[in-house]
Image 1 (cartoon, rainbow, N blue to C red):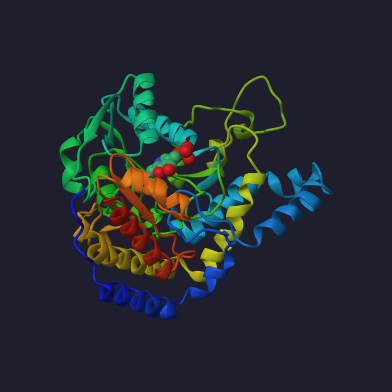
Image 2: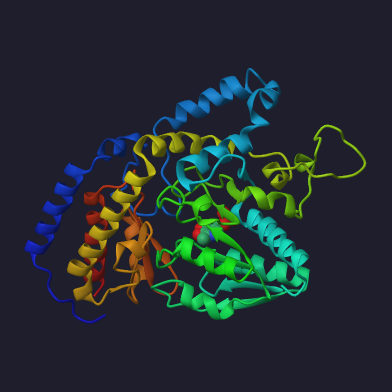
Length: 421
Ligand SMILES: Cc1ncc(COP(=O)(O)O)c(C=O)c1O
């Protein structure tokens, strides 16, 4: 590491005054107290990997065990749990996805739902036109998306076509256009890039994919609950997203899948378990799928893991997703400014778009020493995450993170870098 340029105390003091002023003016400030305290944590900057639990949860979970499970016992399936995958899907759709009811369901992990939808979408496109044998995917997309698309291509005798956008700017219509043709079956992209935080233009990209006669699948893992999404208005065909990041569903909480209403009769998902049978209790000799979004189910849904996200959805509904996005923009803008002033002099690069309109809820900064720095920060209760090869992601969950906490994190990165030099 080269000798660090000194950072004036005026700069740090100025940033602290700004952080406090922004927090004082934050209309969502009261919600910071809705989360469980984490003793010893100075700054939690990883809400884009695992959101924090709400303070109401211990009692909600205890009540669930006591009453819904402990007292109502198996009667709770009829009374509420059978309908939960659709009811919760509709709630996510209403609060965060800009989607009408009957198109979203909660089930399985993101990876399993990606498998179901990539396979169903690619097969539906090829059924309409057998010349459509290409699945288009971005080389920087999250590994599970790429791996599953490759597996489905093998299964269906299709091929992958790769888009290679600028890793900081993220994928644009211009990057995608050369890969679209009358051979394209399905395009799979992330709305917010898991590394740079780049935000794709969902409306323009979906329209361009439809012009080519193909179907569009959006991975919403890093947008849902942080960036407002308009699935219906954009005409998106298929989408998946996880619930343990900005929906604070807890480790391993199940994901959701969206299938546009008029597409539902055309798709056939590959894991045809009894929960998606037309009559689940008929126990008949042959499988016939139920119509509608419930056809995406396979087996018994993880009811206990669907509890925590319900409380978070209520909180997001109360705050309003547009206000959540405004806070998110304020936090990431402030983080970029703090990084410019405190970290750039130490050779740290910004690996996210500068323009907030092109950015989701996290920013990434780069430095060759960041793997070691992250380990030391975790030991001190400052918790961002590290992404290979040299990126630290600052995930700023809007409802649980303040500007001052963000600054504490950036200052700790600076101090740790300087100490190690
Ligand atoms: C963009 C994206 N897709 C998918 C996943 C993960 O899928 P799963 O929930 O199956 O682990 C992640 C996890 O962080 C992700 O960031």
